[in-house]
Length: 451
Image (cartoon, one colour):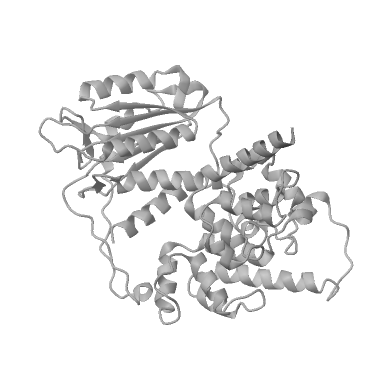
């Protein structure tokens, strides 16, 4: 019986390992830097190896797996907590008594989550004489700074200098950490008797000593951001996802790599809970028939939203069917307007289009040392043609490129846009990021691929 329990426990850990990506592993290793020696961490390539090391060090066992729960909570992989019998709320309740990750480590990790790739390139330029060119992320920079004794719990001056040109919010986080650390070390200094806190106030109070993830970062964001309206996502079904995958045409070029995109989209949206249907090489009549049938589907009534992905050739404001007939983008979206599809009224309708919108190559603006104060303005971005934009609310239109330009596709790996979209959905949805934030990250990732 004992052996069965151990096998079940290891299977749960393996199921977590299978869901984590390489960047998640790097985040876990960074957060554990005070628990496991750096030399040991260098040889760890998977979450399962890390969990095994925890067990070797008596930090993890089947009776106490809070350390894994704490780490998943800190990297915002909340949906994986259920694998080990935890919820986000349960982790928060136990964090003050069971937490093992220091507030210093949490503060550094949360800073890294806010630093964009563009910010990191700017930092690398500023510090090019002091850091190796092989560094690929802000976390790797922090590790290097610690090795060089330029950064520690009591030595944050260099970190402040690094973050100061980027954002005042970053330096505020560091200052808040220093102040709360000082208060925790000298709890009676400047003490003024005060009324006992209510339960709600106690829950809101930030604890540096406990290393609470929502302190120093998330709480500030919550206090300085107005509440925004959100769509209700509590229906019985997530929704339908249509994928039109046109890769074979009469005279147009064969779209190699498109099937890779279709498979990746199906995998991601199935994972998100959608009922996914792929339609390969559809004519204009077939596309119109499928869209007509879909808009009258009774499942919309009990669903949260709708997704339509179109992978094909295109031109300004339109896409092509497999029989090479042009279909206006506005016509695609019009099938799901409120008067045409009442089941999706007031529900988000997402359209992702991997298709050229012209023949030009979209130009980038190269980064320069003085880019932040450059006197020469970049050319004005081209806009989505007005005829493409849905006239109703609740529509989101994601295009692989801007009007007049072609969309880039790798024959083996698929298109830049769709692969970046799928990657960031898998990475950021578990962290509760909204779709506009995700698409901003997708755009940023594409800009680096293309430079």
